[in-house]
Amino acid sequence: MGNGRVVAVHGGAARVRGIGDPPTDATHRVVVPGRRARPARPSRLATRPPSHMLRPVSPGAHAVPCVTGHRPGGRVLRPLRDTAGMRISARADYAVRAALQLAAVAEGCPLTTEAIADAQGIPRKFLEGILNDLRREGLVVSRRGANGGYRLSGPAESISIADVIRAVDGPLVSVQGVRPPDLSYTGPATALLPLWIALRANVRQILEGVSLADVVSGRLPEGVMRLTDAPAAWTNP
Image (cartoon, rainbow, N blue to C red; front, side, top):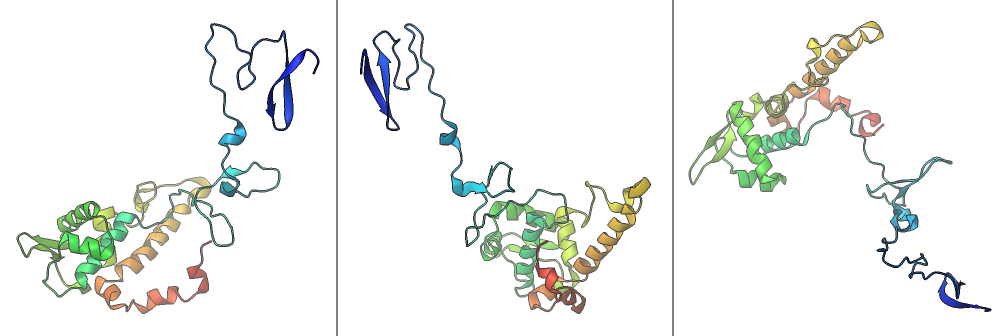
């Protein structure tokens, strides 16, 4: 090959270095005597997420990583947006389930934290804090000793789902942490206040109208069941 010699072959192409060319390293960068060589910068292709982790987007847009899993058929699941919409917290869900477990046993029979946690799959440490909140609000009572544990403070028929949620999470509906009656709006947003009030009234009507006994028995009030009759009630917009 003339005055040069082959020093490496990459991707099927031979790289030729002349006799007078400066020395290079394995990545073909010029080596300067006395200077420490910087580590090679990783290729963009090497750091790009695998193709199965790229979410399909509209034509002309860049693909973005999506690591939320897949649905059958290869359709990528998009992550849920972290919004401040109406939702039941994990703490409220655990509290209601713990209260239902207590309501399902014979009246006056205490259950230990471990028994409730195992029956409902609730983290024990998390459950201890929830039960303390329920006890402070007077919904459950505790007893120490070998036969100790927790039990409801009264009949399951007298304790509503709303009572339990308020005990651990506070108000059923709030806007930016503020109760709706304490809000004020101006201009075109004025009608938002009665809208939030109406929302709270509906949430109250459902959660205050359903007792622990209703859920344990599987017989929810007729008005609640009617809301589930519409097919749209079971779909996610």
